Length: 487
Image (tube, rainbow, N blue to C red; front, side):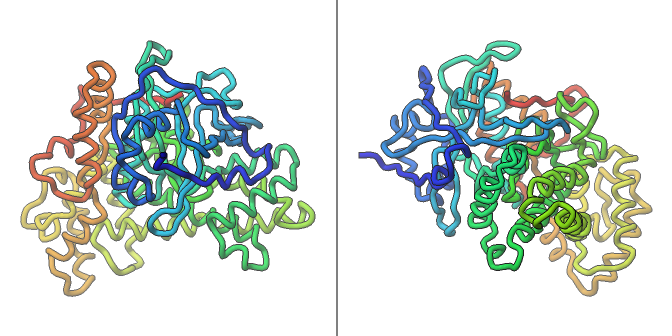
């Protein structure tokens, strides 16, 4: 008797929203990691999931009775170029559950084999990208950033062909949904107004039910997606995260971070930082992420135009007015986050200049983003009694900052330190550590570095004595210049 059951609410939509998928069994699936706390929060049985039937499902080899996997249809702009049909070329939506908090969560396999949307791809994933997504997505969740979650990772016992043969793997991820900006573009490009409306109604019911109670529900949907994405990208910027491939098919309308491909965390602060090997022109550089988010949202607004008003001339200014709110929302969230990172709880007119000066100094001094803010979260930095090592060129700025702190009133140093440490992580998945973890797993079948890095990065705000090496920036010989997607 199986201990696993799912609903499949997406299958209630019309057939052209998705394609049923035949399974692609693998040779010898083995469980690498099961996220037991997440499984329990979803009401799933960890014992069953880690047993033979569970591992068969998590590898895409065999499904329990009643589980009918689907590959979802969507389009998208990839590096600015529109592709009218993409879809889940290597992913299968198994279904959804309601978690312990009452939220609907979808469960999806990634790397499980070919689908109707695979085009020339093999539908598989290599072990390295699966481990990267597992660690980075769980680290993001631990930092409090909206994200898909990693439920499990398995090796398939087979090789996938990339530049060289690599071990195959499958990641099981959990998301509020897998509806993307590109999903709306799929129907808009086909001038399928009925499909577009059905999708919008589904998205409202799933993510923004209060929009249904407004006089203009589709406008409310657009406005709430804009706000969610402005907040999300601000949170990326506050942690030095670079998504790497912000195509419209990689932007979830839920406001969660999705599709961890060539992602990375910036070390030396530089707004032009790019890691993705395929982003040759820096379209998705760290500093471009807010403008690229707005660009993507503009594509969403274009897709929704037929639902915003009876004719386009009326719809365009409505959409433009909604899009105009992005910058203010982003700046509000970003500046509030920077104030918190600097221990400031009140708003002063000079704050923006103070914050800008810090970032300019960091860029000039090639300071490590994460270490700089964590070092500021110390008694010595706040009191001026002992200037931490990273601040050799920061003396003038530090004095301005302490004068600003003095305007906050009677707040003890320890209280301020504790508050700052809750928003300034000590540990991130540093690129050289991620690459070392992947190399050990791929070349030596050694997952100990994966376990260690995961354990450290899912407690990002704790000091963790003895783990200082995980907080250290890469030395010159260790620096990772490029990251790669998992296709």
